[in-house]
Amino acid sequence: MKIFADTADLDAIKTLAASGLIDGVTTNPTLVAKSDKPFLSVIAEIAECVDGPVSAEVTGLEYDQMMREAEVLRAIAPNICVKLPLTLDGLRACRRLTDEACQTNVTLCFTANQALLAAKAGATFISPFVGRLDDIGLDGVDLLRDIRQVYDNYPRFQTQVLAASLRGTNHVQAAALAGADAATMPPQVIRALTDHPLTKAGLAGFLKDWAATGQTILP
Image (cartoon, rainbow, N blue to C red; front, side):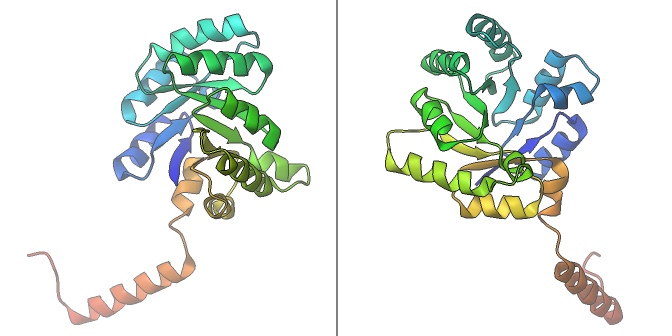
């Protein structure tokens, strides 16, 4: 499963990119606003940090404005993935951009029917919002399973399931088990994937035993 960092924090992105653990970055207007820097410059800097797709979201709601904004975004770097809302105008823009060989990420997906339409529009990624469904008492992971089944029923669909709105490590594991192609999450969740109390305890024990030998590996 591909792992994307869901952030506009350049320091965090650079650290994660250097580790080789992330395959791309997703952003949205809210995340970029937190950086307190010009939107286009932030996206450009992020695109320089990673080789994989960088999702940059349009803010227009009508097709013509979406297309004008998409032209600006895709000119930033070849790895820009234009992020579009799951509306009729957004899907129309998705189809056009896909036909022009531009990567697309259709966002704010909450039903398998919506995901079906995104696949028919040729989306590169569909972003089901797992955590937001959980917030209203539904099971977001069930949506991932439903979309996976729909897409597997129709092999000609090439759209990748990008699990989004993941709130913790349990969501990440569930997304992987559900067959998501990718998952996007805040940097702190990525870091938490390495954490387990038995790992820490085991490491502490090994180091204590090693120190007792008085030896060293380095000359």
